[in-house]
Image 1: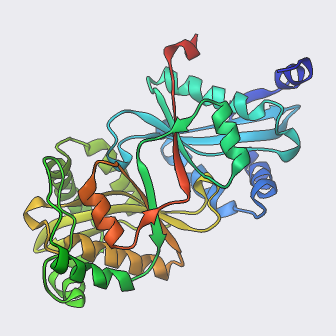
Image 2: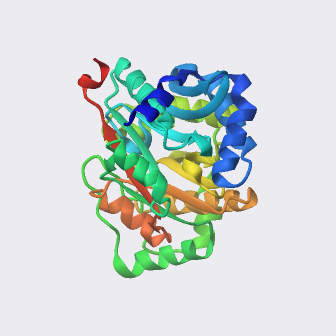
Length: 344
């Protein structure tokens, strides 16, 4: 960094993002992405006020003027993760201030917070076509993550084919700690989705069954993570579209949310955080019925795409989603691993 940039960076003050920064943050974001995303920032602020321990938001200012911001949250188990991480949701710097070290200062503040909380990873995603943002992350020592981001347009027609595919090709075989998400070998799709499986929104009494199914599927106890998603689903219907499947008892669940702007997405997107089917009902169409109902609900909300993250070795789950029309996303999973040296 040359002396001019050092002097510029030295005048930057870092602090927690406050509610009074809201309008300036929306304006900076609009200058970057070309449209105002007020609803997105309102949702992030509301979530942070409700669960301050899980959200971290910093502001960079000079002479009282907001120059940039970073919004992140603690990852508690999304996509089956076991190692603590911070998810960088969005970072923005006033266009005239870009290239002067503001973004790096904000990222450094986030890294310091993570280390103080014994978190050694920062994760994010970025569209591979946003070359400037990818260059920023590369300079900040982010690398490609292992997991695959897959997505598809919200639709219903291909789900009907999924059942026929299963009949012709056979079911994927589950392994220890996993479940078979495939459709049944035979039967009518509409009958499956509407008659054999009752798919509905969450109710308070569903939590215990969800925790039990998840432990059986993953072999791990993720009660606090799922309880947090469950509470969000019941109390913030604006962002949660989670579902349960019942056949007399609860036999499956999808934990999902609508995302109106994380990582600079240009269109509303739904993100599937977790899916589980009682192993005793594996291969009976429960996963297909839940995905079908999710797509119906998302279409009514005018959400155009749905996305999830899957470990590359989870062949059964990847196969299930690919047959349902998912394919590799244009977004890349990025990770920065932190060392204790950073804190010193």
